[in-house]
Image (cartoon, rainbow, N blue to C red; front, top):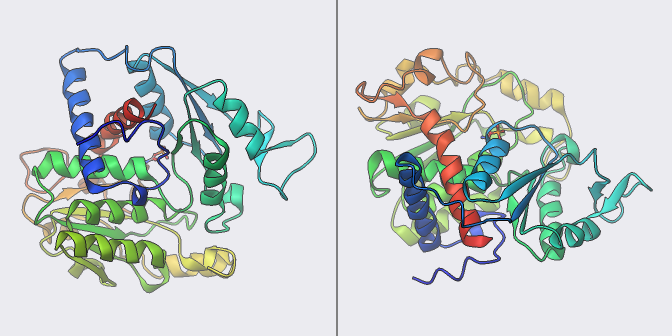
Length: 353
Ligand code: CP
């Protein structure tokens, strides 16, 4: 296949990328992973290039995997705190000498670096669902260099690439793999939908038999569901929605239980702008927790996945998340999954920048 189709591309959502392109990213990521293990360097690929990273939210994995990845490819990742520059803002949301219009920020940074990566969801956009995604699209409209989505309020494409890379590594195939993306309980209702939405898009795109399990109050974006149905039809694979935590896990190869927002937390028209209602919905499902009993329902070689950070003792027991022994039947692969962020991001940066 052609590889020059990647150069200069934004990665805002995997909905814009084909199955063949994702497969190529995963293959390159595995090459980079193998080469790093044997000490083969690739520090000429992005030499003297700069990735600007604009973080409206906190991060451990995303920031450090992009920074380490740029170092390993010979370039530099530059951290930007929106409160320490003139906060990039859309027209109509500007404050004099405190914000700077996105169209100006994007064009200035495009003159200085080779890509701009952005994380924005939740509080910075006051839980107005889609507002952060719109911000990233505005950056993409004005930027001359690739815009990379480090998680917005709809999508977390690099997490999803790491997720499917982990499935590929563990099972060697996507065909016939039952991938269960499930809601799980957390005391914090402030959780974006980006991870589950991107995970089900990626799993269905690659051909997994995908099950989305959640209480009725935690439904995902109808556009995402429609895309998953289309992906499953394209691949001749399955896509189902379940409201039963335990029965959804039956026979699963991949169990990925994590909390995400209940619909009431979002501003109208999507939700009711009510943290009280969102919290009440969360607290109704405390039994949605990854325990050994839950893992036993899956395939004998089932893997437990989580994007991290996990809310231990609520979303998952220590027994499950810490059982990383590959000889033990079902097991946790969360640290492999976290490491794979590095490899997929290097692949995308090498191809797009
Ligand atoms: N999974 C993930 O994106 O982690 P961080 O929030 O630490 O970046």
